[in-house]
Every structure is written in structure tokens, then in C-alpha cells.
Image (cartoon, rainbow, N blue to C red; front, side):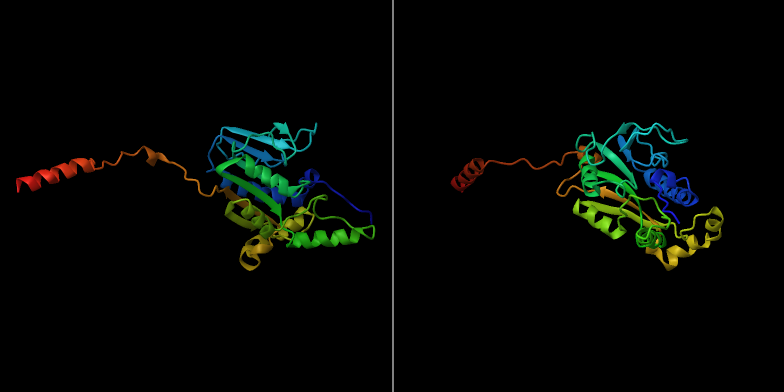
Length: 263
């Protein structure tokens, strides 16, 4: 059997890829709906309009390569840039979405540091990733082993370095992010046909209860913290506190001398 290699964009058109996109779209819509600000950025995966439910006025989609093939129903690409060198000033973005962007980045550490630089204090980053410690991850590792012998077919897109959930949380913690939301999903087995995906629907109901951390995908929302900084809210306009009028010590001494002389 010949080796079959598929890229990320083509893989999203398969039944398994469409199943993952549907789950991530639901997670995204619920997470970004109540995130406010002025500027939002999505890095990669035009097939997933991660900012569709968000109400931030200025939104952009960036990719790391240009494609002349338009994607039906996808947001138009606003800029092409290396994700590790974004053309935005420091502390200028309120929301950055990374749907599988770290996994297929040449330097995921640099990409995450760049996102931290561009986010405002209390800004949020939303990340989707494939879980290497899942049924899909095990099948992908086995397929890579078979490729050494010249046969086999990869279950997941090739060229990505899948980052574990807890490993990513450590990276975020080192960059002073606090994880607000962390969840797993897509518990069905790694099958390629729509028919078998429908038959395994029961796994999505049993997975969160019986093997919660072994979902094929994970979803994270983290907020950028700036230690030692105090944000001023509407309370800074409160009424000033009145204090008693101070009396100079010289006046107090003169008053005491007058009382002593009168005695």
C-alpha cells in the first residue's frame, strides 16, 4: 500500500475533519460571544470562522501563506504574515484565536510569545489543538511507524507537531497567562467514513464521564495577567473623602502658652 499524505486544509474536507470543525465551531461561538474590546485577530484555518459570534468591531484573519483558491463560506484573508512576527504593536489586540496554529507553526514558542506581546493586559487567547494522548493520536503514531516500511495511511494531517494539553498549559503559565477554560471533545474513534462516525455517536456522551482527558481535541481560553498592575474601573470617579483640616504645630504651641498664662 502506498503512503497517503494529506494537508490540514484538505483534511478538514474529510468526514473526520468536518466532525472536528463542527465541535470547535460550537466551542468558539460560546467562548468568544462575551469577549469585548476593539481589535481581534484569528491566525490560520480560514475554514473555521472563529470570530463569527464575537462583537469586537475590528476583526482580521491572518494566514502564513497566500492561496488563490477561495474557500466557500470562509472569512476573507486580511494579511499574510509569519505568526512569530505579527505586524501589530505591543498591547494592541484584545483577542487572538489560534485554531491549530501552534501545531503547524515552525516555532510554536515564538508564536505564543508574539501573541502575548500583542495582547493588551487582560486580553484573551483562544486555542484549539489535537490531543496526542487520544485514540486519534495513537493511530497517528502507529501510522508514522508503518511509514518507515513504506506503507500505511495517516489518520491526521501531516506536518504538524501535536502539543499535549498539559504541556501547553505550562507554556501559558510561563508567559503569565491564567487558563479560564479548558475542555476536551471529539471522543469518537478515528474512522474515515461518515457512516461509522454516526455509529460511534454514543462515545461523545460516554467520553466526558469515563475518559474525560482522552478526547481527540482540546479547547483553551487563557487571559493575560500583568502582575503588580491595577486596572482602574468606574470607581475611580467616586466622590473624594473629606478629611479634617490640619492645624500647624506652631499655632497649637501658642494656644497652649496663652492658656498657661491665663491660669
